[in-house]
Image (cartoon, rainbow, N blue to C red):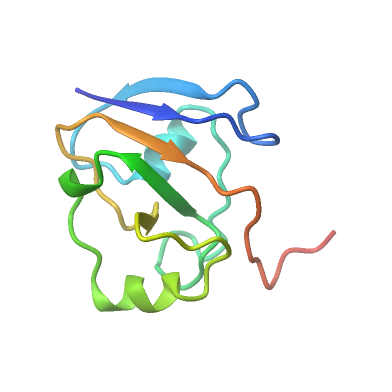
Length: 111
């Protein structure tokens, strides 16, 4: 099993989170299944940037980003070289440290 450490996020997990997941699951699904309610406005179809995360440790273990993901990431708030869309990044057998950016760009969210 792979351990995912989620750094504290003011709204989604103020104390951070730590959990184990099986390889092959997306980071987005892993977060959602473990009580971290990350936005995923396009229902995980790589059509928005609301599930943008920054991989602080373990980036090289993830499947490579494809061209569509790279194009979408260009629109993300707070983009960093180690940014990924969590709906596209599949967990391998290497532990990860994940940071959820403070802001997200959601063109359809109301309120």
